[in-house]
Length: 113
Image (cartoon, rainbow, N blue to C red; front, side):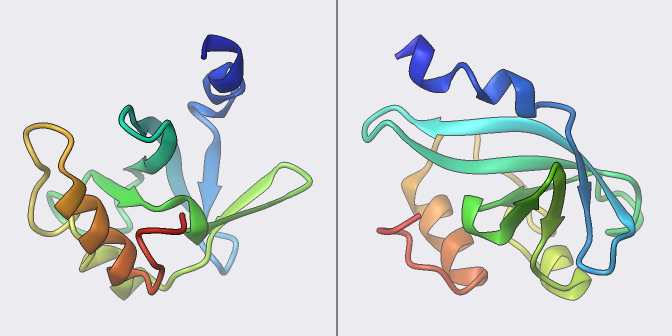
């Protein structure tokens, strides 16, 4: 399994841009669902664009697009600010209900990341 996920270490600290190209922050962490072996979500370390006291956001893999090393969040800032795990806190441990809510917030099916 280590080889399957070895590319993830290269993603950490990647600069993530907003749709308009402005810097949104860096990829801080990657959460894997150990029951399914699927990537559950990324965490973004914010550069302050989310507002006072909000320093990170949870992002489903579908919301990021990469082209030639430029990684962008394909959601508007208001949606990011209101996302589960951004505005209303993080679960204490991996929580499939949190992941389902996160995916639905961005308009994706939690069954098909």
